[in-house]
Length: 216
Image (cartoon, rainbow, N blue to C red):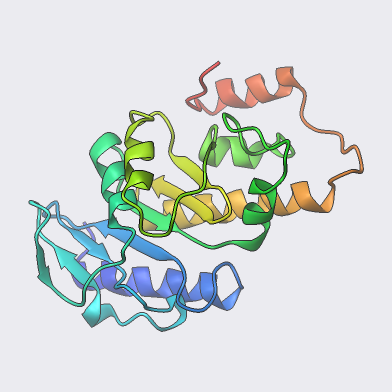
């Protein structure tokens, strides 16, 4: 069992690591994690991943009421949509990651299966990623779009905006969203070069071996 103090430190450490490596810049991105009592710790609005203060994270109780800390990110509807529809969600991360945003702008982007099968790892960590249309930042309709997926996807890509990923815990969510960005980077680097992707049979073998939820 992770203490709340340790979870606060972990959230800030992982966020700074992603900021330092350029996965989200300025005051972009937001992150949240479940506490042992069923509440949430959430990055405050207008804060930088490079400078999150463990003591100022927004703290919600199990009923969804803000009980401590600074006001939360305006993207709370995205986070609560994942927690409400995926019983396995223990953390949610949203970044403004450059390559995944670039891939979302491509006219041939596949809305149902956003990431091309370039490596097995995107499949293993993310399953199918849903590409959602553009919404104004902070629009509650983003959360409704996630709810419309009925918990079937652990990751979505907001077109012209950034990826959002739910994981079993905050480390898993961060690892998965980094895999999403890495795969998108590979896709953009090899775009127009006719890269040799995994075959449908190879994808299915990965799905079967690692028990990946994979709708056909």
